[in-house]
Image (cartoon, rainbow, N blue to C red):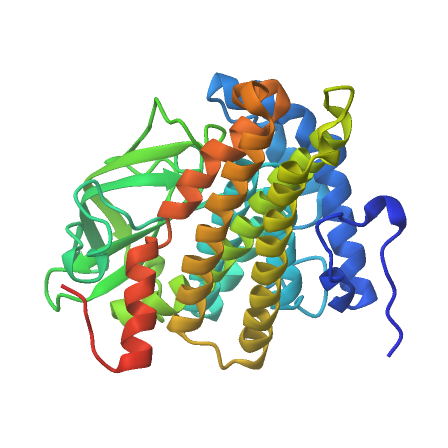
Length: 400
């Protein structure tokens, strides 16, 4: 088999084993398109808006013009057929390599929201909502987490849905909902008061009683517009209930895929931090020579590269399991738990290498260090993902 590598200027120093070469040529072109977008147009916007705790609305236009949304969904993106899970994951990595907040904005829209509609909706609903989402003329959000709930969401969802004829009435609250302050379509999950099953509803922008308020004071993901949502007698037509969702088991299938995407994000954060540290080690001089020539600095860099290489290999195989249709909850849970733990190590070692400069935003590494904490916590904590895997290998549930 002949392997075609990216041009030298587009190769990543962190891709020590050449994982990107596993992508077919056509998909690698899409990846390099995303790389150029992030490097040339997105990166200049990041630090200023991260410092201001602001979402740069021009990002929507940049992504709209790029044609990168909707690619995993047959018939809805610019690429036909749908791209592989390996490319989808590698693109999530690529975006997080520049900025985790921007990667999350895109992932919430292109992953959580679009995947919920594609997987949970019927054909009429897909055709109604996904075309405008694929062109990013309409932006999506995903509202599951609640102010008083976290890992207990499967059995402890407090937001309710009550049917009245051809209308559903939603009441409750959601928290940490990315994109919700400006999204056109928000997929809201609520418990049906009649059968106690979790169902999904697409709430459209401007619906009375739907009140998203931006969460202030975050130390991570400062570009993402996370919202706390209050739902007060929000009336949603039966036509906006996702027809293929009738229990949390159906929702879990969506989370299985999106959890894998978060693991890819964590890999991107690792790579971005490592690249910054490597460049700094080559340029920063102490005792008359670059610090990259010192043994302890090389030790930090090589440990980081080892974490990246091991995590990347795990995620490549995870994507292959997805493409083969045989991946399970425990597969994505192991990846999320393992890769985010390795990410935490790499961003700490990378920030350490910068010394005092590591706390200055101008050097970028402080942003990676802070954003890693959010990725470590969401889409299931390390502990919960560990228990999902533990149940799988022992046959015994340790859940409370």
